Image (cartoon, rainbow, N blue to C red; front, side, top):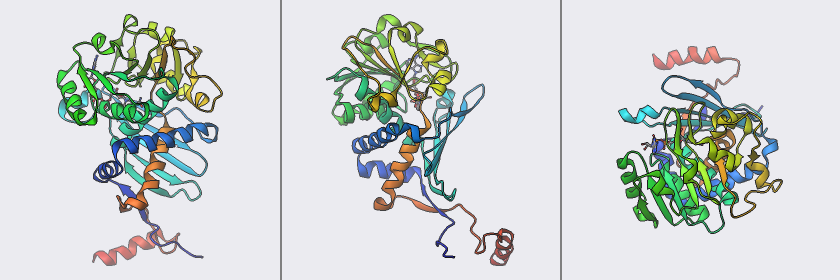
Length: 351
Ligand SMILES: NC(=O)c1ccc[n+]([C@@H]2O[C@H](COP(=O)([O-])OP(=O)(O)OC[C@H]3O[C@@H](n4cnc5c(N)ncnc54)[C@H](O)[C@@H]3O)[C@@H](O)[C@H]2O)c1
C-alpha cells in the first residue's frame, strides 16, 4: 500500500491570505472569474445534491450551515447573520467553509469566507443581472451601504459595466464610508437623502440592508417599469425588504425555490406563487428579460452552490499563488487503526 505523505495537512486560507489573494488577482478580475465559476455550476444544476440550508434561529440572529455536493467534491459553509452586531464592533455576517474530496471524505481546503461571501454574493447578483437587467444599464441604486455594498458595486462594474451609483443608507456614516471606499474605482457617485431619491434614474436597484424584521425599503410607487431589482438583504424568515405589491408586479427569479420560499421576499406570497429558477434561464430553458417594460426581481438569499463555486475557485488559485498555510487538521497515525497508539507515542514526545 502506498501512502501519500502529509495526509494530516489541509490547506488553510486565512483572512490575511484571502485579502492578499483578492488584491493579487485584482478585485474586478476575481469577481469576473468567480462569476464564471458560479455560472458554470448553475449550468450543471442537476448534478448537485441540493437542500435548503440548515438554520438555527435566535432572538438576535441566525447561524446556518450550507452544504452541497456534485458527487466529486463536497462543500459547506458556516455563516451567521446578526444585524445588531455592528453596534459592538462585530460584523453582521461572518463565515468560513470547507471543500472535501467525496472519494475519501478528506477536506482539501479550509478557508475564511467572510470576505469570500461578500465577493460571491456580489458575483451572483451580477450574473443574475446579466440575464435580467435592461440592456445598456449604466446606473445602479444601492440602498444599504454596509459591508456588502462596495462588493456589489464592483461586481456590477466588472460584469455589467455600471458607471453611476446612487447610494442611500439610514445611517449617513455608512454612505460616506461606501462613497469613500469607491472613490478611486471610476464611478460617478451620488449620495442620496432618501431611498426615493436613490432610485431616481436607476435601471438597477440593489437593496442590501440588514434588519431583523419585515422592513419596507422599497414601496410600490418607487419602482417604475423596466427596472431590475437585486434584493439581497431579505434572507431570513421574518426579514424582508420589499413591499408585497412590488412582488406581484414583477417576474421573480430565484436560486433554489424550497429555500427562497422560506427566506426570501416571496415568503410574503402563497407557497405556490410562480417563480423562475435562475439556472433554467442560464441554460436557455426559460427566458430572462422578455421586454423593456418588464420589472425583473432577483430574490437573492444565497445558496450553497454559490459557496461551492467560490471554494472551487479559491482552491484552483492556491498552487500558483501559494497564499495559504498547511493546517495540521487530520489525525494521521502510521497505521490507520492505531489512533490510540499515536496518542500514547505523543506522550513520549511531550516528556
Ligand atoms: N443574499 C445573500 O446571498 C446575502 C449574502 C450576504 C449578506 N446578505 C444580507 O445582506 C444584508 C446586508 O449585509 P451587510 O453585511 O452589508 O450588513 P451591514 O450590517 O454591514 O450593513 C447593513 C446596512 O443597512 C443599513 N440599513 C438598515 N436598515 C435600513 C433601511 N431601512 N434603509 C436603508 N439602510 C438601512 C444599515 O444602516 C447598514 O449600514 C444582511 O441582511 C445580510 O443578511 C445576503
